[in-house]
Image (cartoon, rainbow, N blue to C red; front, top):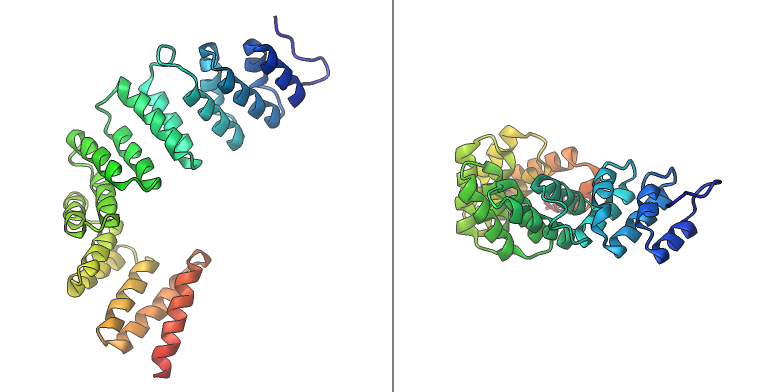
Length: 275
């Protein structure tokens, strides 16, 4: 029988439990007040790999501490739970947690477990594609989006995601087709208009790209990159006065997260005004 120490539980106590493979004690430690102890207990349970810890680890996915949730998700991904946890939605949830925390390869493992249980879930295929894209494995991401679209061909977001990956692969005509599919479903999809403009500009179809940026700004007047890209095209086409207007608008709308873009816009604006 596992009993927590009378005067509290320390990280060294958790280490001793792991050395003894005291799974029941470690499960109790998952609910201890100190998040460092909970983190270490989850890590230990993942290393031990005993499936009897699965239910407690699933409950701990709702822990108030983000680091604990990450460690719990990693522990569940590591434990051989094929027979213990036959819940596709739960594996999907674990995959989402891992992706949000930057553990893309581990999230893919969880999505695979979800898809083994329910291969007809379009969002799991989509999010698996997103994790592949996060890793730079763009061809694999496109394959996942294709599977998702077989199930949900009217999902604008999946078409959009596929378009992004194809654009990143410099497959611009195909990416434009995907953005068009997304826009046929949702004509107010500002990000799809913007990225269609990016692909068109990459093909030197500047007039069409400008129309896409205009549509983007009609839907979202605060879209900083659309102002910047429109200014860049106008600048390249020799329409310097109008380009300056859009560089200024870009600078006006941009938040500090766009520091590099603001710097470039200001530099070009100075050059235009000095010429």
